[in-house]
Amino acid sequence: MSISTASVLVNGTVATTGGTATTFISKGQNLDVHNTILDEGNEFIAQSTVSFNIKSPKVSTGAPNGFTQARNTVRISSPLALDNGSYTTNVLSISLAVDPETTDAEIETMLVLAAQILADSDYSDFWKKQSLA
Image 1 (cartoon, helix red, strand yellow):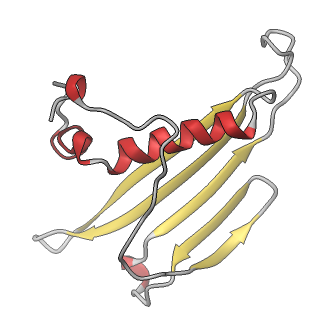
Image 2 (cartoon, rainbow, N blue to C red):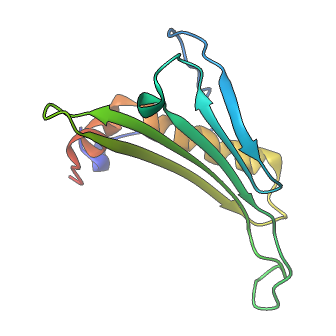
């Protein structure tokens, strides 16, 4: 489906069904980053990693609110064994940047919109075929 004819449910409900609940194993953290792996029992080279990162707002006289935006990023790295025996790593990054005055409800609206764009079949050609049609 083309992007111009796709739709989203503004303030809809997003739910994930099926699959197997899998926990994370912490590989370490500091005040801004928490690195984890999916606890799938894979050998080291085949472990999927998930990194949670934050940047707190800082004072900035040039920013409209006097502060930079709060930034949250999740980076998922998933190794892939290629047919030739080599490995590559596929990556998905999800970022959210909001003004400190943004309400929880306003953030939730953005998260629901993003979840739909990530998972809804309306956007399948964009994600899988790089179609901007």
